[in-house]
Length: 452
Image 1 (tube, one colour):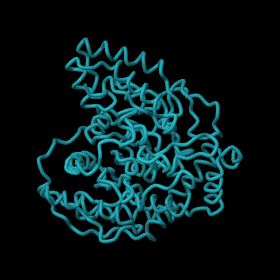
Image 2 (spheres, helix red, strand yellow):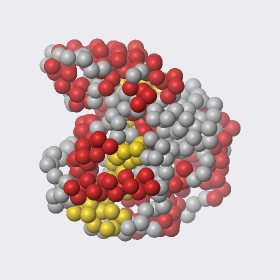
Image 3 (cartoon, rainbow, N blue to C red):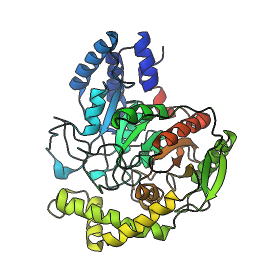
């Protein structure tokens, strides 16, 4: 009999319908796995065992009676700790907010609860979602399930590690400039940033509001589709396809920034698979690094406003912030940003992306493998990772991170599949085909965690 923690959302729905498992049993299996593995991984900062058990008992009875609220009814999920959840800690990953408690559910959590999904706890975020390592010198850190001496990426590193290790089949993240896509790639799972505004951000701690997006992280694209149907009422998934005939897939002539061999090979492998599936490959030129950096002044201005005027963390609570965040925020504020010029450049970026003559574009998710937990800020890991993801955030387009294989160190390498604004359904349908075609290139689970 298969271990319940291995089952994805679709498999769980089948098991519930066939009487092979109950939501109560599945939640207990997840809680047991959290207890066994999370002391090392550090994916969760809070577990609501009693609440999850009560909710799973209710889901078990409803499903037995024939009431199925959604494709995720009875499925446990993790919640990135920048999402507000009623009565749960609400620290946004920072000691500056120690002792805060959520007053109500964020819209994303509320919708998933109403659909019968079961929140089990808070996954670790990089402090205020402002980093790509999910490390904190005082508050605790998350480790990559594929190599415990490496970071999982961020800022949704806890969510990615939890899904990759089989602690939960699904987790909420956020994505301002890659915060869901980067850790998904580094942990070997699926991460999705939808078209900006498609999912409500109410109850999510802001970073740069016109860039922020709710992210969905899972092992399979179909699970992302199921979550999207709940999180964006009225949104419908596209019909499955048998091939990619008629689809134009763009392959950039240059990557911004330059990337390592494993990352460029991941794009080449994905492109070859698309061609095998019938797609037409077309070269595309993307905006330059200088153009992207000019547009990012719009994001910098929003970040400064968020922390000085909205959250009021800077400078009032600077001493409670981690050293790395003090340095980052201090540098932002002292540098300043020309918001108007940034918005003008951003408009040009959006126009350039809209004019790309391709249905999908393939590009790297990160420029290199994950940094070491011993020195997470070493080199240009942070900046190069973000630079791989800024363009999609500036354009507000849907972007999907898919696992492709392993790099030379045996760590996951991924590819980013993205499309035009509002084409989320197509990105996910075609991404699901690519996921299936690429599946055999990556072990199903991190090897050292399978037997635990």
